[in-house]
Length: 347
Ligand SMILES: Nc1ncnc2c1ncn2[C@@H]1O[C@H](COP(=O)(O)OP(=O)(O)O)[C@@H](O)[C@H]1O
Ligand SMILES: [Mg+2]
Picture 1 (tube, rainbow, N blue to C red):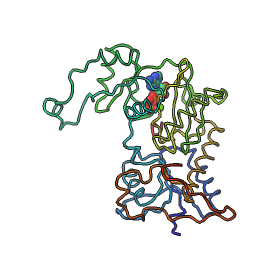
Picture 2: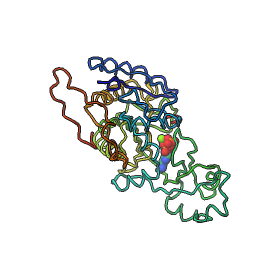
Picture 3: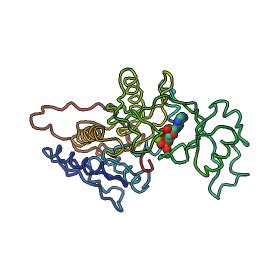
Picture 4: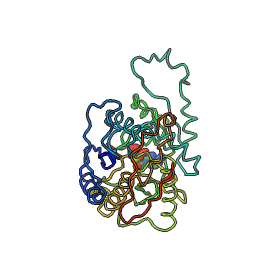
């Protein structure tokens, strides 16, 4: 077996509390199988330059395009990347709202808006003939209601998120959006709020969350989510992550009356900092993240997206990591079925 079958790489931004304990735990638990975890080191790479890694956990490629390019190619060459770099790049909040509606998960009424500004090469008179102008702002807010939330279709870190109370307010905020594609969303005046950390699409940890308080106090570990509310959060978050194929995500719900509205579920590099999610939840994350990558590194599980893009069918079968023999005393491992099986920087 090549070394690749045994290496787990981690790509991170400025976060500091997750990387070391995560790598330590994977090394500790993977040692008997010869699995080694380390910060990935990447530089200029040729197209068929085999990646060293059986698994790469990617927490920053949305801000470092070179990593994205490398990861897409590594996927083709057989590396399991958490999360799928192709889908992460394609995914958007508006698409996710449509998907949620089709899946029967409640989302606020949402409208996607044409951009306010374009690159200099776009001539508004000649290049934008397919765009309705001016927009029918009155009709748009009739659909979403007021107040409403104007926010970027992709993004994170609560940047450019505006609560608007009137059409005038909305246009003022929209006029600051520049080249960002924005969505306008029904404002959910919630009574309760939950954030679910989701790992491996099956492990869902709902945590009470208060977006209105200071960052470090938002995860409220002293008020556990229980009973029927918990069940519903787990079911809806699980359905969304399974459909999206994210192995690492957070799904936020605003709870109003009896409805859980999914607000933000595009967090493929979720906040894993111990000071933010708190120690107990941090332990849960380490446990499930290490388990996930070890299963991939041992060949005990297949990533949900492998084989799903058109180009997979033209490959010769060599783009798979070598099968791993069963561990001592473990007997035969059941092969995972195909398609089966979580922002300034992050969410
Ligand atoms: N439709 C909405 N109704 C009520 N609050 C919202 C809505 N959309 C966003 N928010 C609030 O704004 C915050 C940031 O929005 P979010 O979609 O999570 O953006 P980001 O991707 O930047 O994190 C949410 O955590 C929530 O508190
Ligand atoms: Mg968010």
